[in-house]
Image (cartoon, rainbow, N blue to C red; front, side, top):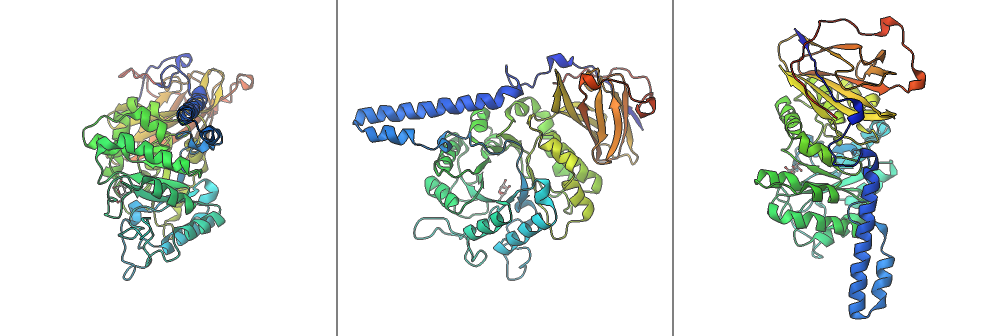
Length: 491
Ligand code: GLA
């Protein structure tokens, strides 16, 4: 099957990111300004209160407030967070009598922490180990505080934090804004300040805050409020919100400006399940809604399409590479949910692919875009570093959704992909580890994409001074003459 993919694109000079009228380069700076404004407003309002009360001490208190109280600008998650999260693979298995190896218990987290370090995940960037639902007792303690289930977590959460910190990892925990967690454990409604304080005292580094048993309308106030209490503890904790997904599913339009301001990451869509159908449904959601979602993402704040399920039961090898490629190009958090004790080496290699992770962690933090979709073939592109003059580099995913059992060839010129740097792009196939040398705008890239698979390439812009054509045999030339079927614009 030959699929000839052709398109016209905007000249690179007009590159824009859909982020309004400022470029991705100055966004972090704008964030800082926003934080300064917030700080200033906070101090001003407290000074006003102090004047009214005639208490100078309040002014002093305002001035000595730690920077961590400035709203979300907590300096965390400047690239998409990477780690391991229990939920998709281990769910709410609390039967430690019959299934001690797989139940939600401290042993599971101690073992996974060991594997993250010993098997190279931490070295590759997976630094968070995150507890999900079902860790707590069914009731709060007499002091009104959340407490870990004493049978399954006899050492307590702080001991797990100490352990993972001693190994160079960070600990995440799960809470819920509503009356109960999704699995029916105590929620934080009415206890926001106490629970934020408890997590901080346990030395937690990441909080996933779910939204079951809460009214979606209350979340516009409640999620920022919990974020405020997190920040007030003075401990830096990544704040993962489920705020938009509950609002979307209840028919509301989320206030994404507020969400991106108050959360480091947020779930937009349904829970991932262990199947290719689930993964593709999620990919479609992010592609179909990209004009809304892409502008929200950036250093410190990310759309979260949910966990990586690579190495579990539901995905083939090709599909696993596809999930990894799409997640890195969508600038998604990379939170793997898999049994690290039994994962196969080929799946571990996908998760630890350094070239893929480098794209994920690109400092520009621009979320990639679906730029072509026709006859079961998609092309996704993410602008990345290095930026040479006016030209971005790009990560490109060629994604074959077709199920006819032979690879589809996709043939496209570098120019058609939107890359116009006359000095060319050093191009490599990320999973094959193969170099295409330097390709120039007129050169044609031809890739064979396996059914329900991907080819992920990185095209690094070459500085003009290195200009010079490589030997002809490095170029992928020729192919069928193309005709234009669509004229997508991108970036
Ligand atoms: C919700 C979340 C999941 C998981 C479960 C736990 O469904 O979306 O990611 O945390 O709750 O009960």
